[in-house]
View 1 (cartoon, rainbow, N blue to C red):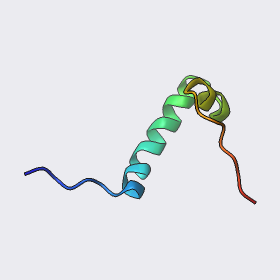
View 2: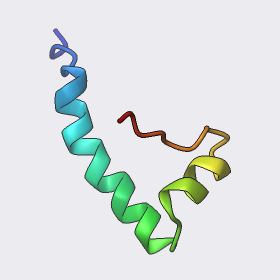
View 3: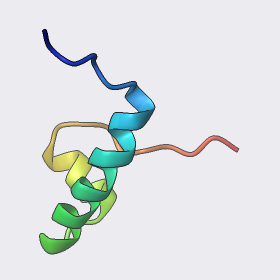
View 4: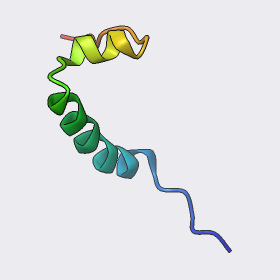
Length: 46
């Protein structure tokens, strides 16, 4: 029997720091990394 899928919030707490570290090692801003991945840049709601 396989283990249950992690909750999205739990997965994010594991993946986000890893992605941030990879992005920083590549000297990419968040906007540049998003553009390279074909994603729109992050927007901030006020």
